[in-house]
Amino acid sequence: MIKLGIVGLGVMGTRFYNLLKKMNVKVVAVCDIDETKLKLFKNEEVKVYRDYRSMAEEGGFDGVIIAVPPLYHAEHAIEFLSKGYYVFLEKPMANDIDGARRIFDAAKGRNRLFVGYCLKFNKMYQKVKNLVDNVLGEPKFMWHIALGRFPQRSWIHSKSISGGVLIEHGSHVVHVFYWYGGPVKKVYANMTYNSNDVEKAFTVTLEHVSGTVSTFTLSWFGGHNWRKWGIDGEKGRIVVEGYLEGEFLVSSSDGTMIMREVVSMDPIHMYEEELKHFVDTIERGGKFLVDEEEAFIVQRIIDAAYRSSHEGRAVHL
Image (cartoon, rainbow, N blue to C red; front, side, top):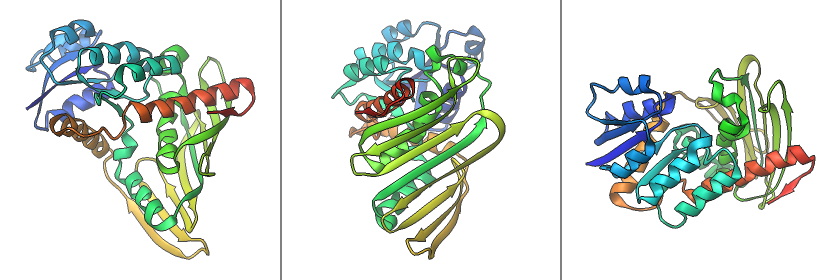
């Protein structure tokens, strides 16, 4: 039986712990700097730590899930990678490009790092990818619009901790653009700030090597939530109402409706699937679906977007 540890017992770390209890996996160690969170595990058969270095040193597990704020990703991931553990690192890779590069260098070519870009495990995004590959043809234009409110979690409001809204939240969409559209050669972005150093709204446009153009607009200034995205391909169009589930429409280039379907399922399934993938890859070998190479490419695109907004020009990769 695979044995795992978890570092960071916030929303995601706790969610992963509860999901793993239903799988043929044993969580043997947990770590958090908050003693209040650790007390919740006093009746569980796990060792508790406040220092991730002590946990890495004592070991007793095959892999570790790291679910701490992005600022701490590099030091945590490198510590466990250096000791040979398999590492499931919550996205993004790091809060900035320097931290991501350090992780990349520590993980390169070792098949030990999996980065949790969970939309690759979401059934709706998988279905759309299948439609792109088999019905719509090569993407020509991709777009995503997300309107919402700023989350209450305090650390997201800190640029040094979260890296910013685009990296902490929007990296999911950037990853999907890369997954569907392939390598990116040019990035242009414009960001709007309010009372702190974290952007509250942005528009990011990517030019892919293939010629595909992708654009992502987000505003967290407030009001009701609204989310919609779509793809124009060589042979038709798909429009999706919603983020993790919802209705999608598919039409041919002449406007003929091909498909209308509603994907409705608990988004928890994508977390279950990525955990299964992590465990199965440890047990059976093979390659992680989102490794250090892919995650670092996403980080480079996002770093280019921040530089583009700051410098007022397109940035070439």
